[in-house]
Structure formats: C-alpha cells, structure tokens
Amino acid sequence: MPLGNGFLTETLTPGEGFEPDDLSARHPHFTADMRAANQPIVAGLRRVGRRHEATPAQVALAWALAQGPAVGPVPGTRTARWAVENTRAPELALTPGDLAEIAALPAARGSWD
Image (cartoon, rainbow, N blue to C red; front, side, top):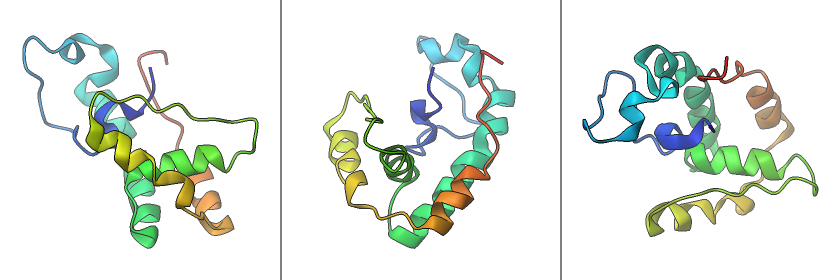
C-alpha cells in the first residue's frame, strides 16, 4: 500500500480517527503509530513544496518523474480535485538540492515492515 493514501494530500493527520465504516480504520498502515512514524516524510515533502508553491503530493510525483524515463507514476484518485492537482507535478523543476533533501528523508514505514 503506498504512503500517499491521504498522507500526501494532507487530509490524514496523526490523532485523527476514521469513520467506523471506513476500511482504513482497520488497516495496520493507518494505526496511530504508523501515521506518526511517516509524518517526517510528509513534513520534508511539504518543505520542498513550499519552495515551489506545490503540495507534498505534487512533490512526490515530481520526484518520481525525476527518476528517469523508465519511471511513470500512476497516481490514483476518486476525485477531480486531486486529479487536477496531480497534473501540475510535471511542471515542477526539482533542484539537485531538492532531490538530495528528499533522498535524505527516512524510509516510509508501513504495515509490511
């Protein structure tokens, strides 16, 4: 399961719960501990994004695109708002410093750890 599920759109934050019928409420990836453990990644992407007037999700997609022509991110979404936001990612010109900062972020933790 990718880190992005609500983390990079900043609609999921530590301390917030889920509706009882939301499947995320029962998934180990979304425990309070896992959500807190992955917040430094979101914070780092947010820092880079501020320099580019971009969201953490856009920065993550731009980073994936910067990995070379063999990499093609396929962001999933159920809403037009996020789809439109994601289309701006190719416009971001991440600097070597941005890429180094992202590379220095801790590895994502998840239910597969």
